[in-house]
Image (cartoon, rainbow, N blue to C red; front, side, top):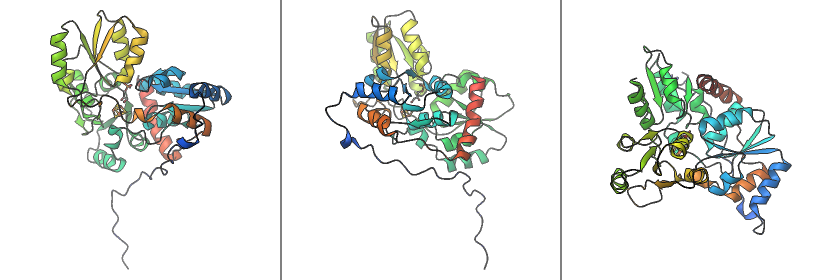
Length: 336
Ligand code: 13P
Ligand code: SF4
């Protein structure tokens, strides 16, 4: 009997382990002071709590370090804690595990994904790469470990411009998965790029109409925007950069009032660092609260307490994927 035909595109990327069970919220004693308990568990377990700027205020205040994707990656890489609790989204916790594999990495909710990550399934990404042999693949850190493993260099919004400029001019560039960040980079650097059609569901929602109205009402206000926003928003920006760069800009640039086109969790640090300044989040068009990231906001104090107490859900990656994903991340850190 003839053997079945071999698909030349047979997946080389094994499936990731099954999803973790949902956090057992019913097991949280409602009389506990969760903030005290989280501090106690951190001490008892020699744990470090890393948090992204889009986390709830109380989680940011409990964290040992709050930062953007690049700073969080660096911090995770050098951490000597026995346990890393990552209050962010799953791709960030995975990055911590990839860079520091001997540490146990847990996150409050395993379902904290990202629309950019889900726009790039590993197998489709692999086919895209294969369709462009010879191209260099720059991939935004907002992607799965399996997609990182298939990429040449990872970038974040703080180092992407520098890394694009380091690519020899005769090389074709594939940029995934954020088409808005890619388009902004192409425009800034003058490098044409082939873009993956992904987008952030939060940064795509900001309303151009509201910006025009706010700028008319407050002509001296300066607009700071994240490059995950579409060009229709970025064209009004006085500053475009990563969350850390936005935070630096709005707390140090001359000016009293700033319009903010990124997830509004970051306003917490802005108000702490510059209480005398006014920060106005740009609303979305449709009146919903879509400038909050639904994935980041899955993390709550209860789930953070549970992940420290039970040390799960834990990031577990097949070593083959972890080691392959580490290479483009290390390349990024060298080039940053
Ligand atoms: P940075 O914090 O690196 O700017 O990225 C923001 C982000 O994508 C998280 O959603
Ligand atoms: Fe992903 Fe956008 Fe949420 Fe960031 S804000 S985690 S890019 S969905």
